[in-house]
Length: 550
Image (cartoon, rainbow, N blue to C red; front, side, top):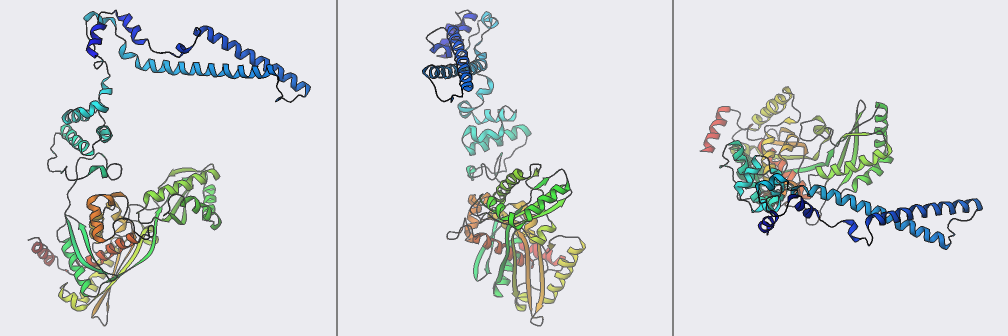
């Protein structure tokens, strides 16, 4: 059809073809009279009715006659006024929109005389703009190599591939090829197949080109609070799972470990600014007033049935005010949940303090993904203490050392050494190793390992030096069993292995699943302390590592 139309079109003069192409339905086509005459009639009608009504209402005002008492002439004038007003607004509004549309769409159909002189035949497909060709059906029907070329030279946005192609796997493959074309480097070693990328889109990762393989090992059984657990650990560090498994064995043979959840509340700390420090202090007093807190809590708690505001602590920094909100978040880690609640409270406060400027929803007093004293002292997420009594014979048989040697090494290394280095929450051997491995395996945010691995390890000889009492204190573990990466297939399988996949079936919102995960992580750290302290000799540790790797 396009070729036939174009063939016929070349026998028609250029100017005539332009008029034919522009002969589109107009707003005036529906009028029984010429548009000029109709416009004049309604203009006269509008102003005549307006003049008549204004003159009549003036007379009524002078005679104290109620305006709502109308005679037949006034009613007809009102009808005429309304009808003419609707016509004028409707006509000119439609005409403006139609002219705007015609202006943007007529361009490709305007064939100039130069094209006509050369006898160029244009089909309808030929005159579609190049940009329009790079979307929709045309793009889907193109080859992956063609699309990758367009992505590589910037004609097709890489971030739009999933929505344009409607296939997340194909989008990742095309983007991957575009990266290879752009950089000139192969991505052959990066796996592409074997993952459902639709579960990643909009939640876990953008601009996907594949997935990284990380080995997952298991340690256990871990005897914790009377129950046995097999714990998955994703890591590329040799001997980490083996040493943790050895800690599991020592704890199991000594009767197990006990965990206590001391505090539960995620934090978010927005920062607002005023013109003066005095005004900032006024808001501080307002927010910290117990009577006002109830109102703020109601506004905050509307965010979710699991979000329950616990406290707001304010810190002044000049004319800036940092407000640290703490809230429960159910079985979710809860950063998005609490951020929405904070936004609701800020909007409410802006109606009271009109001069309040919101600088940022997060002002780093939270503090997220940073080792800070406030998290170490006040806690963030889950605050947990875990303890175990390791029998002397188990230490000698399994850990190949003695109670006194462990106590001394923990004091010199984990306490004194960390203090001399100025550590904040780093009074441990390698808590970050175990926390990171479990975070990656179970779909947590790996960056939150920074504060989640803040840990204090203490060891004491008890029973006249025969046994070892070990405690691990971790005040800011940030975990969840729903949301984020926990819904990916591999991570969900690891959570299922722990028995904490998803929300608790009978008590959703009471964070029992998250508590269990937290306890497991703390217990992993108590086991992990035996890796370095039980091998004081660097030479011996190197030999053990080599042996295990063989």
